[in-house]
Amino acid sequence: MKYVDAEQVKKRMNGRIIKNTIFKSSFLIATLFGLVVLTILIYRVFADGISWINWDFISGKLSTDANRAGIMGAILGTFWVMAVVAPVTMIIGIGTAIYLELYAKKGRLQAFIQTNIANLAGVPSIVYGILGLTIFVRAMDFGNIVLAGGFTLSLLVLPIVIVAAQEAIRSVPSHLSEASYGMGATKWQTIKNIILPAALPGILTGAILALSRAIGETAPLTVIGIPALLIPFPGGIWDKFTALPMQIYYWTLDSSLVEEYANLAAATIVVLLLLLFLLNSAAIIIRNKFQHRF
Amino acid sequence: MALNSKLAKENNVQVREMIEQKQKSRSFLTIFEKIIPILLFLFATLSIITTIGIIYTLLIETIHFFSAVPIWDFFSGTNLKPLSQNPEFGVLPLLNGTIISSLIAMLVAGPIGLMAAIYLSEYASDKVRRILKPLLEVLAGIPTIVYGFFAFTFVTPVIRSIWPDVAATNILSPGIVMGVMIIPMIASLSEDAMNAVPNSIREGALAMGATKLESTFKIVIPAALSGIISSFVLGISRAIGETMIVTIASGSSKNFTFDITQSMQTMTAYIVEVAGGEAPAGSTIYYSLYAVAMTLFVFTLIMNLLARYISRKFREEY
Image 1 (cartoon, rainbow over the protein chains, first blue to last red):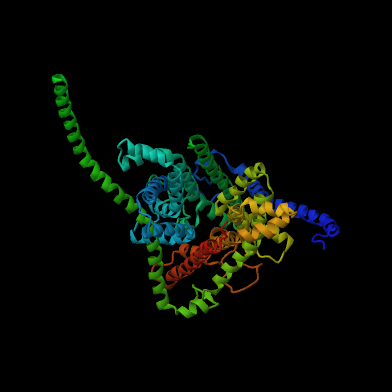
Image 2 (tube, helix red, strand yellow):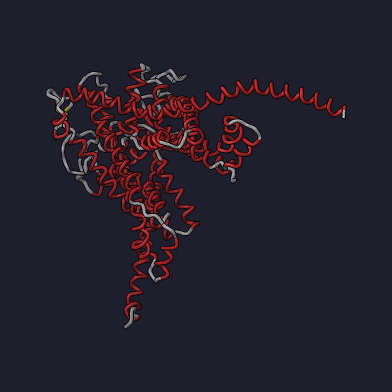
């Protein structure tokens, strides 16, 4: 008795190979689909917006007149929000990561905090907006100022920084810190002089990615209540503000009323995407240039 | 000999002094060493405080809401008229909008994301993968507001030119765009799961004469199934929580309908509308914000826990 019928195998071979080829190309098409959409998206945004970008648009004030509108206020708003988010998330994020990786005893509490951080990363951004509205804007009575927006966005991106910092700290080999202990250094001296400098590129990369996530976030800001009105340029963290994504939001919504607003929104998107591109390039450069391989 | 002992004596004094000096500075150091972990622990508790803050604020205001609107009316009502003379607060239109938009998104992102994952993990050469994967991840880095703009000003007009029945604001276009946004997430998580399948069993299948396609569908995918399913669940959770795309492109109609050519409001879009409408604190509308947010929070939390449970419980170990 033959276990394998050679004739049958031969007959079916061609079909199986063809099927494999067809599926392979459909898998490739599926992979390219996303990239095609990405290309169309970027092309559309640039085609609509690029001709509207000039110095007056970048440096000008908001205006209901599409031809005179500028986004300096939104740029400054985004800048001030970043000035809050960057230090807050760096300090708290790195602190939490050091505690979890180097101080916390492996046990229930540590596992609980870890699970909690993972869950926080999955909470929709708009829920953070409600938290910010209730705590920072109303209960602490900040109003809708830069500080309230910055704190809200900080809470939102904090899990990203923590997880990145944890991974960076974990990747520092233990022989470095053991050598430091062997020289008589204390734990904190070892962390400060050995572990943190070695982990810094990884931490910075994570922090920059978190920052670029915060720059593009719109939903929490809509809940906090960013005015669509003309407000003076924000000069510090206690001022009312608008931000680039909020400006895109308002102009897109109103583009059914005034057609040129769609162009203004597209032009603002170009500015936002360039900003994100710069940040991400910086992250990649830092990662490639300063990453030690141990 | 005498010299030696004299030297030793001098040295001894010096060393003793040094030790004493050292101990003095040590006592400062030990305090410092004890304060640092406490400080760092306080930083770490902030994440717990955030969770408690979210649950506490949502819960308190939701309880207020349910003292004005019976809980059963909220969860079974098909009418949502917060601004009318006799306001009604049924959440079903919003749930319906959320579920339908997420379904459309998953119909796009599920198959395409999985197919991309199969290509990247099973077919692509290292070189191709190293180019394609970061490019695909650019999609995940684009702010959602940009997708909202894209859905509203490009995808909707394109759909309407093919299918004129579609309204200017509809649930179909944001659903599709949301799907595109989720593709990289599903592709990358599923690819991770498939990469974790050891090469030995893959090569075993190939050595038996299976084609790549057969080894993929009969060996790799079953082995990576828990990771793939959990990536789908995370994708759904992401779609449920997505805000700006649906807010911009799907409008604010609160009709209870299954017609995907029409405007529908999701839970997230309702929150944006009500919060942006300057609802006076203490009004029922204001509290309805929290009840809807609570529903949204519970939904996404269950999804996230489920995803983690699936990937942990049903993981195949090799």
